[in-house]
Each structure stands twice: as structure tokens, then as C-alpha cells.
Length: 282
Image 1 (cartoon, rainbow, N blue to C red):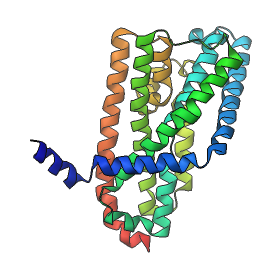
Image 2: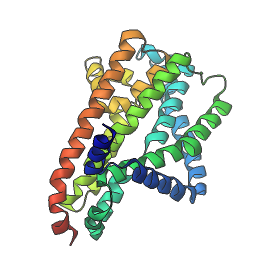
Image 3: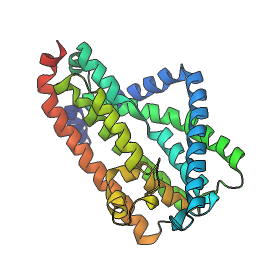
Image 4: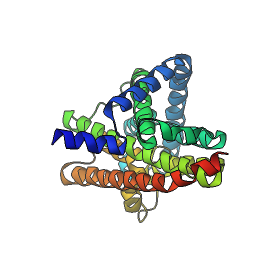
């Protein structure tokens, strides 16, 4: 059984050893630009502060508009956890993939000892690990120091655990969305417009920029069921303890379903795109 499993892994180009090497290289590459991430911590602090004060002004002008987010503590916690989560799973593999297509470098990736999506996944995992320690945790520490006691701790150890599970699924969903966006470059060569469209969709539909509670009541259930909800809305509500019991299980099951679907779509898109790489690569 072990030999058969190893043979399947090798045939699919999913070597754990190769993946670990690419993840390590990605982590070390980012470690060379530590100052950039110090500035990033400051930027994320500003993002949270601006969104908090804007939303607080909206609620004070119309306090009955958003029932679940009336208190300043809820707002600070919501935006702090949401932006810290975004810092953890964020990657830019779509833009790097487009650069490789334009330069013809992507064609050379086919001779590597691993499948290209697996390489990109490993690099994204290494980048995410770096971001957890050098961005998300420092961001949360700064916010906790500035906004104490408004920034609340997790509703409990169980809720923190569920939120972390949701964050792991969010990483996979974001990776899949980015890989699919980057693969568009194989057909179009230039994807700057697609990158901006994806950025705006993620910001708007994830709940990181605008909590779902301020959207019309009819739209909120649909937003909560989209794959983008996993990138902000769901992990935050799990952290706050506003999703419990069966509701929490259903939210995580939905995330897992979207993860499986999007990763399967990535495999299909790559199988189609690789046939045109040499032609597009020049």
C-alpha cells in the first residue's frame, strides 16, 4: 500500500520533499525583506483604524442600522481579526504566474520534478507561514496594545480552534482563487484588469472591508454562502462566538466544500492551460 501511495504521489508530481523545499525557499526569500513587513504591520494597523472609525461614525449616525455590531468592542474585534487573518493567508502567486507567462519562464517549469500547481501551493504555504509570524501576530499584538480593552479575546478555546480551522481553509480558497486568476494569463498574456477585479471582489465580498450586517437582509445569506466569506466573515464570527453548534459546523463544512471544488477546478484549469504554455511563452 505504501509503495502504491508513493507511486501515485510521484505520478501526480506531489512530492512532499520537493514541496517542503519550495516552501522553505519561499519563507527564506521573504525573510530577506523584513523591513517591508514592518511597514506592512503599520499599514494593517491603519486599515483597521480607518475602518473602525468610519463604521463607528456610521453606527452613531444610525444606531439601529446594524444590530449585531453596535458596540465599539465588536467593531474593533471584527476588523482586527479580519485584517490579521487576511495578512496570514495573503499571497501574490497570480501576479508572479502572469510574469512567468509573459517572460516564457513558465514553459521551463514543466521540467521541474513536481507539478506546477504543487510548486505554487508550496510557495504560498511558505509565504503564509512567514506572514503568520512576522505580520499577523505582530499586527494583533499592536492592535491589542492600542485598543485594549476594546479588542476582545476569543469567545473560548473551542472558538479559537474553530477559527484557526476556518483560517486554514481560507488559505486554500485564496490560493485556488489566485491560481485560477493567474492561469488566465496563459490565454490573455495580460491580466492586470483581472487582478484589480479579484482584489475588489475579495475586499467587498469577504466582509473584511464591510461587515455583511450592513448589506440588505436578502443579500446576507448569499454572501455568507459564497467562497469569499471564508476569507474574513466566517473566521471572525467563529472567533467572536457568534457561530456556534450546528451553525459553526455548517459554516466549516461549506468552506471545506468550496475548498475541494476550487482545488479540483485548479487541477482542471492547469491541465487545459499547460497545452498552450509553449505557444504563449514565446
